[in-house]
Length: 88
Image (cartoon, rainbow, N blue to C red; front, side, top):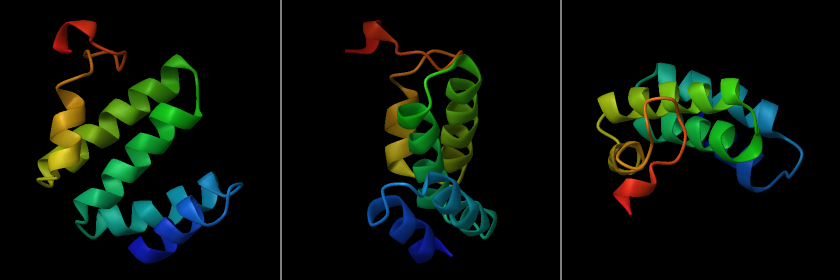
């Protein structure tokens, strides 16, 4: 599931929904990097407050699965999912 999710994310430009579908399956199986990629999609590709909160939720899940990228990203976000300029 993880590799399929990566395929749809990186090889198919119009397939965020399909990527998310497969990455959620991989995240459910405990792959932290899958949860991180889901968070990244929500943070970067959808520009609304709900999506930013969804991204924050997935970053937290990934961090709980010991994903270092998610832990790093969380240090740069406020609790509402917006950028924390004080962390730079």
